[in-house]
Image (tube, rainbow, N blue to C red; front, side):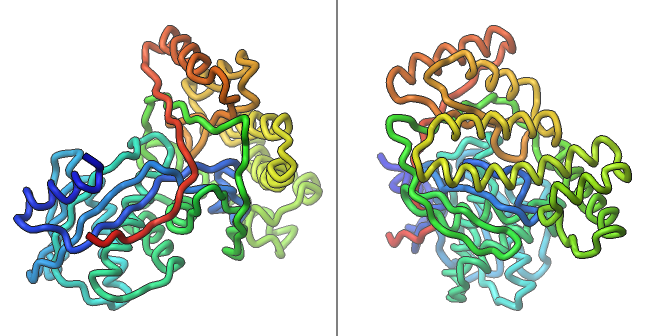
Length: 386
C-alpha cells in the first residue's frame, strides 16, 4: 500500500470520512551554503523524494483537529480561544495558523492527518515540510491562493515568531520550490534564484544519519544569528554600508579584525568563505569536476566544525571515516548542525559495501547505529486530488 493510500485509510478511520484533498511536502538537502541564509548569502538546496503527506477536509466547526499519525498524537486548535500546545509538532502547526490569522485570513475548522517518510532530526528539514505542507493545505481550504513566496514566509515566520527559532528561509524555500533533478542557487538577500541541473553520474549523493538529534531549541543554533548580528553592528562603526554579514568582504574583515574576538572573526570569515564555496560549487557542478566538488564539501565541513562550531563529534567521525574511502569524493555535515546527517558524494559502484563499512566503524566507536538514505532530487510542495 502506498503512503498516499495509507493517509486516506487512516484519515477515514480517524474522522469517518475520506479527505477532500492531500498535500505532499518534501524534505530537502543543501548541496553547500550552510548558515548563510539568515546572513543574506547564497544557498544551493534541492527538494528530495522523501516527503510528508497530509489529508485535509473542512469540518464545519470552530476547531482544527490535527493528527500526527506517526507519533500517535493529536491536538486541537480552537479558532476562538486560540489555545497553545506543549507538543513541538503542534506548535509548528499552530504557528502557521496564527500567521494566516495575522494576515486577516479567515480560517474555518478542518480535520487534518499527516504521516511522513522524512527522518525526524536528521537535518533534512522535516519541520519545513510540516510547515509548508500544512500552510499549503490551509491555503487551499481558505481558497486564498497565496503565491509560493508568501507560503514560504508564513512557514518561516511560524518558526521565528512562535517557536523562537531564528532561522532563515532556506528550508521552506527548498520544500516549496523544488524541481525534479535540479538544485536551486538562491541569493537570500534578493530572494532571486535559478535552477541548475544536478548530473553527478557515476557519483550520487547519499545521506548518513548520525542518529544524534539536537533540537534547534536546545542546541546552540540560535546563538549564531545573534552573534552574526553583533558582528554586523560592530562592523558598521567602520563600514556603515555593510547591512548583512554576507556583504562584508574579506579585505574589510582584515582591516577591522582587531575589533573582533577570535570567535567573531572565525564566524565572519566562515560566512565569507562559504559564500565563495557556493559559487565555486556551481562552476564545478556545471563542468562535472568531481574532485573540486569533493574538496569544497570537505572545506565546508572544516569551516562548520572549526570556525562556525556547529558540528559534533559524531558528525566529525563520519566525515573522517569518509576520507578513508577512495570512492567518496567529499562529505560534510548538513543542516543546522549539532547532529543529523552527513552529505556524501560517493561513486555508485560498490556504494552499499562502502557505506556499510563506514556505519560499522561508526558503531564501533560510538555504539550508535547510523542509517543511510539514498535520496533523489524531487519536486516541491503539491496538492494531490483524491
